[in-house]
Image 1: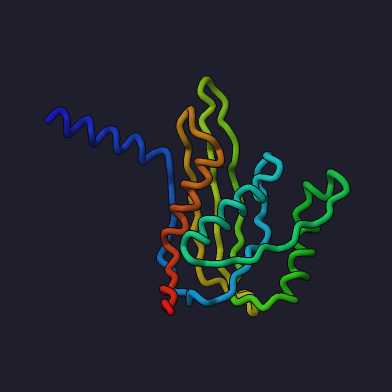
Image 2 (image 1 turned 180 degrees about the vertical axis):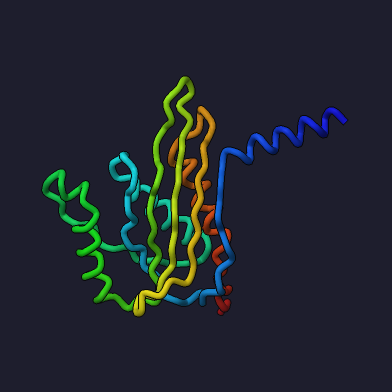
Length: 176
């Protein structure tokens, strides 16, 4: 009996370290064309959105979704790095020239190590899938997780993005 109580208590403690709002999506065709658009960085960590985009790209590929990514912009000054609007504007101009069905974007709310002895990683991400043509939103998910003391921020980011994408349904490709 005591073992069951300890197991239940451990599960409750561990579940307090993460929070996810993930719904199942409609089924997207496997042969549709996808673009990863810039994510907004709402953190104080420089380039957190770009790091999340790279993880997102590999996680989508693992699900069978081949994506193109907006081209990197030539930044010349700190203001350009910190200002998301210039990057968004360039990416939207690029998107207008692409034969893409869906775009996936979102925001990074948290991407850092917490203060303290162990400095646990903390990651918070929101993802959104939209029609590239109409801008209509088809799916959204958000989640956050605090990792353990020896875990990396990018490792925690992988876990959060993987959990978010668990609600994304993609039709199987026809084998030929």
